[in-house]
Image 1 (tube, rainbow, N blue to C red):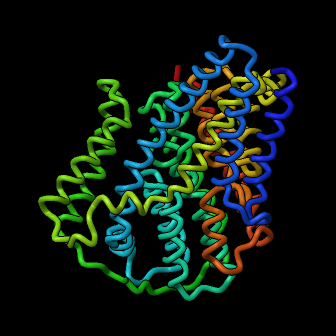
Image 2 (image 1 turned 90 degrees about the vertical axis):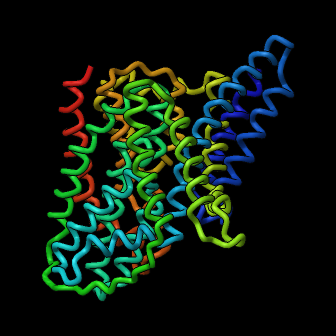
Length: 416
């Protein structure tokens, strides 16, 4: 086993490099992480010394698979709701319903930030970013103003996701590890929303014009309205059910999904070519496979006791400083493997300090355009948005991130 450890660590490093340089090697990060994740566990079994060690490896794999299954089922449930509502145009309808027909650029910037913050906490940040990009592209804005808008979108989307387990996978992972209670996480919305507004103030300089929104409305059917309400009720039931009766969120969301299927069966007029179950196929399974590969790799690193070096910073600095730096680090390293590794490493922190880490790894990726899924999606949709043009606002983003983290720190002092 000793001679195998360096090889396994090297495989994990290669997988991480594959994620970082995805755009250079043109190989999807899901394929890279799944390959190295499964290979590393197979090597553990092949080079096992005896039956006792093989049994321990099997137990470790079973633990990792159980964690992955819970995460997958929750994400599949939530993403199916969002995929359906997005396909039926309900999300776009809501955007144009709340936005005024004619509005100043400055006011639209604030409204866009507010929409991204709220919507990304309910749905996934990729959908929130795509909807916002469509809105920005429909406006006749010069490039500089367009970059100002999209910079706020990326930060607001990532900020909105940290307070609800439906909004950010790292928040969900920290909650599922029993580090922070679900109602405690909701309080993160206070400092996170304030810093989004502060960043909007910073970015609103030079926005003096007026724009007209051309609404592209979709017909709202009764079944679509009912499923929209059901989605919101499922989120509320997930939070209240867990807080009052300790019902696992995955169970509540699967129950909500089952009701969605029944509602569609008895209310929908869709033809057989568009059945409700087809929306599960609309889900981005590459994202789910990426999580699978990453969590297999981190589980392997835990199995060979290789995570201690990652948490060495917590031996040098107090958690409040270490968590802040981890947030900045998440702009370079994907926050999912970073969070998974920290959770597996056995760090002891108070609930308030875990809240700080939740905010840091959720929002820290906004500092660089390549640091989060929202930024990468925005780059693919907004021509002119590059690493360099986004970097112009690094000072503003770092200040907003720091103020938000300071707000979470102050909040955490009241949580025990």
